[in-house]
Amino acid sequence: MKEANTFDFSLLILLAAIWGSSFFNIKIATYSYEPITLALVRVIFASIPLLIICKLRKIKIEAFEKNWNKYAIIGLCNISIPFVLIAMGTGKINSYLAAILMSTTPLSGSILAHIFTNNEKISFLKSVGVLIGFSGIVLLFFDKVIINTENYLYALITILGSTFYSIGGLLTLKLKNKKNENVTTSTTIWSVIFLLPFSLIIETPWNSSPTFASTLSLLYLGVIATGLAWLIRFRILTVNGLVFQTQVAYLIPIFGIFFGYFLMEETITWRVLLSLVIILIGIYIFKKNNLGIKN
Image (tube, rainbow, N blue to C red; front, side, top):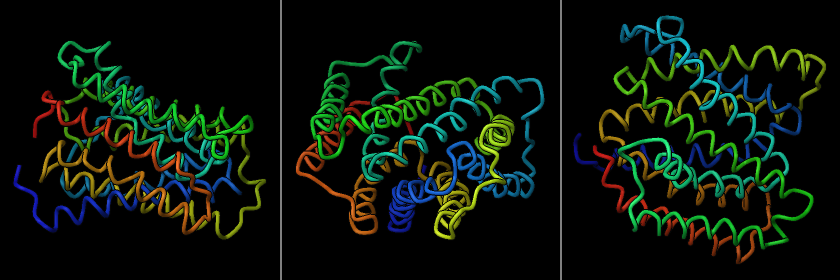
């Protein structure tokens, strides 16, 4: 993997800005679209550029071959379920809060990896980082301006969504010898298969009357925040490696707060800013000692 240059850092910042902006767009989209339909449209749009890439690079898509059940489970846990849960949660809490809660995915993933893998055990310093990071989340729940009796359940749902990302990440390790493009495309195809019937049966989207703003946000989520973002992520992973790409976790909540405050006029308190600093410190300590990840 080559050393990152100015262009590489620019792509990383762009990726963080796109993912950070997805939360306020999710919130706007939920004004007109139900969570399952929202998730379905996102993955449909995401699958289009992925299919094109596999076609151009002549990469075989193995979604329905021998290991189809692995692709199906990953598609369910890593895409379908978290996309729906995050849409449910973000619709009821501040968009920037969702971004902050989602930034803790590496911390919850480390706990699951410690329990279910043999080579990703948490060291003392890693555990310190995890405890500091989660203490920042606990502090958020003491801020009644941001999290109260009306929405605390949706904050927990958002955290559950991030946890499913971690579960999906662990399951993806079972396919680590497969091409990244094939795995992502195959799991996306399966997520469409899972979401489509539930959207049609439960939410009957043809009966909705969506606003232009919600539709525009939904298109942005599908084409830019999912499809284009995954292409940028592929490029960063293949050129600069996993360690460099994971640095995006520091930037996403910062962009989330920026967009939430300036575009959605969401209230930001001193506890929110303090919680963000604590969470980022926890993530930094954890990643600093995450010697198991190599470029």
